[in-house]
Image (tube, rainbow, N blue to C red; front, top):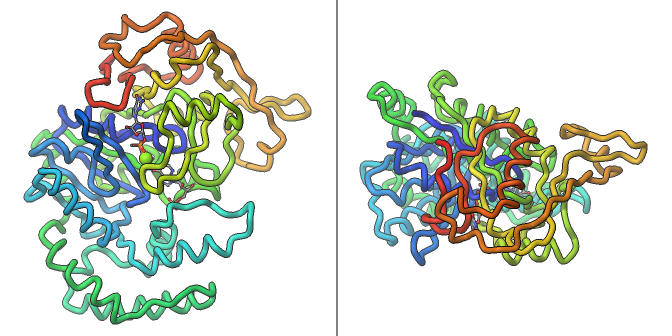
Amino acid sequence: MNTVLVGAQWGDEGKGKVIDFLTEESDIVVRFQGGSNAGHTVVVGDKKYVLHLVPSGVLHDGKHCVIGNGVVMDPFDLMKEIEQVESWGFDLKGRFHISERAQMVMQWHRALDRAEEAVRPEGKKIGTTGRGIGPAYAAKVGRYGMRVGDILKPDFLDIIRSHVEDANVKLRALGAHELDADEMVRLYTPMVPALMPYVTDTIQFLHESLDAKKSVLFEGAQATMLDIDFGTYPFVTSSNPTAGGACTGSGVSPRAIDRVIGVLKLYTTRVGEGPFPTELFDADGETLRSRGGEFGATTGRPRRCGWFDAVVARYAQRVNGVDFWAMTKLDVLDTFPVVKICTGYRRKDGFVYQTFPADLDALKECEPVYEELPGWQCETSKTTDYSELPENAKAYINRILELVGGKLGVLSVGPARETTLRINI
Ligand code: GDP
Ligand code: IMO
Ligand code: MG
């Protein structure tokens, strides 16, 4: 069984937790896009683990973890993360594989990310994570990127020097500090022997594994509404976090994918700039933020919070072909007397959008159309079986399923590993 798991909203839906849950029945977990902009949290007992580049399956000894060709990998961040994972007591040797085709995020990409964001006028800022993601993908499609395989080349350090020179031209034009090529060479020199053992042809590795009937789990980072094609462009990330990205970012054919799981938070959050039709600026938004612990796992920024948006979820169901939903954070809604679901966006002239418009200006004139449902006002975080849930919580979930399509596969009622209910997968 080969599974693609994607975020259905604007990220931070709880993908890390669900990946950790599904890893038990998988052999290999593959990251296929994004980079260290991701922050995936897994809570085991009283320990909280946050993964950025290393797949969230790593907490299961013996499972293989792959950084696929579609990822932009920052060797500096990765080295730190490898050390951290090892300090937690997990051995990566022999089970961690980095594609030689993956692009690298270098210090100059981070510098460019910050410099480009700094010169964007108010209203046009993206609120990036500052991890160099946009400039690294721009280098990839511009065909001047650096690939992981370059570290195996004897002239790797010369390649770095020439890239620093090129990047300095851009940094200068943006009024930002230039980088020192010698310093960059000093920084990257120790990374060559440290990362070399993990670099391999992951396409070959994945195909041999598939031939041997191993089960592969594809771990999406970011989410549908942050997708460079399907999201709220230009307030998006620079990759394809949607299901199709799993194929282009790993070298595995769509025909090898058996199912798609979408992770759906039972309300909505967004971190960074850009449209968010159901955003709340009142006490309800505060309650969601504080009960949900809605602060970025990568940047610590407070997340913007709002009611569940069925227009977004239905769009995500279609774009990704979601078979099963992993619904998360039901427990966060436990105290509300009323819960709301957005079913459309009403324009001033009365027209209601039932699918997400491409033109973001159209959204500026819209008000969300809400359905109100009674809350359940009791604790759900101790639930061990779906049948134990309060009727109003079931009604909320069922109404969402009716509106968005797909089946309920997994329900999460708390941050910890054991607060995950298997429903239908
Ligand atoms: P990801 O980026 O999609 O992996 O999600 P993050 O890890 O950035 O954010 C999800 C946050 O919600 C983390 O702090 C998780 O520990 C937490 N979380 C996940 N599922 C649940 C849940 O069902 N209930 C609660 N209360 N917290 C959850
Ligand atoms: P996970 O995998 C939430 C957002 C940033 C910004 C936009 C572009 O943890 O769900 P980038 O640094 O990618 O160029 O930033 O995308 N963003 C995320 N938001 N969760 C993420 O990852 C995100 N990764 C990027 O806040 O708005
Ligand atoms: Mg996250």
